[in-house]
Amino acid sequence: MIGNIDNLLNILTDLFQKKEVQSIMKEVAEVTGYLWDRGWAERNAGNFSINITEVFTNKELDKLSSYPFYPLKKEYSGIARSLFIISGAGTRMRQVAKNPTGNICFIYINSAGTAYHIIGGEKGEPAIKPSSELATHLAIHQVLHQKKATEKVVLHAHVTELIALTHLPGFDNEDQLNTILLGMHPEALTYIPQGVGFIPYFLPGTEKIAQKTLGVLENHKTIIWEKHGCLAVSKTLAEAFDDLDLLAKMARIYFLCKSTGSEPSRLTANQTGEIRNSTPTVPRD
Ligand code: 2HA
Ligand code: ZN
Image (cartoon, rainbow, N blue to C red; front, side, top):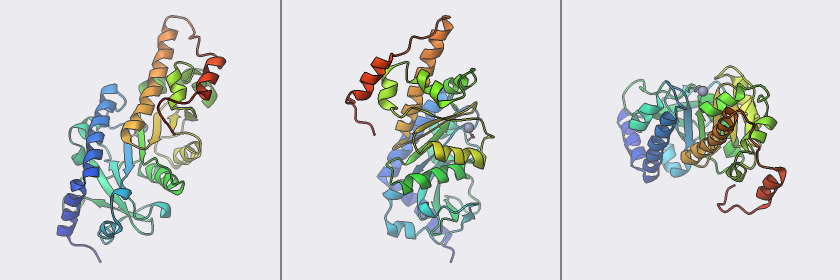
């Protein structure tokens, strides 16, 4: 049975009335504004998704189960009956910042994990469709859910400084990237102790890059996609941004040193060892 359209409109109103959703939408506006201001989201670059299932009761989720669904190419049974906020296909981060509710969509995965429903405010075809990277986002959320991870957010952005780094000779591997990025400032190792993951170039939006990303996320929370951009998983969108911001700062320090014609001296092995053995002042998992 397909639910009636008036109920559907009520559900959208209900979603926006949740204080948790309102606070997430404020964060969406703030962080997408930063992404645009940093120049990390030219044109329609970048996308994000947030698993908001835990904000809802089973009864509330039940209301969503009888609406029209779009089939998924793969089955995501691990995130069946989950609800996500995801950036809209083709939307600009600068538009999301000004009008978050008009540039994101809520999607609900059916109980078999085989299709999704777009919870829209209009009758007929929803104006905003999920990001073209939906499959990558769902695959990552499924792994996070299966691991009972506290991370609920996936953020992809074109972080200029980190993309530039991957164009330099010798920077096509994880070891060299981490030697440089974690060697520029003590905070990098403090907040990103596992270092950044690296994925060599693949055509954007393909299954190959999604599969590689899942593998690298086993041991990392931030990943650099060679000559393309970055991906971060975190508890909140603000924290995902913080991690990319921190890495970008490290790259800027490196480029600034290099622009003088000298090699940066980098933190010594003793200094990095000391950081690894110290108790962080700010708890970080
Ligand atoms: O969302 O950045 O890689 C547009 C992209 C795809
Ligand atoms: Zn991209």
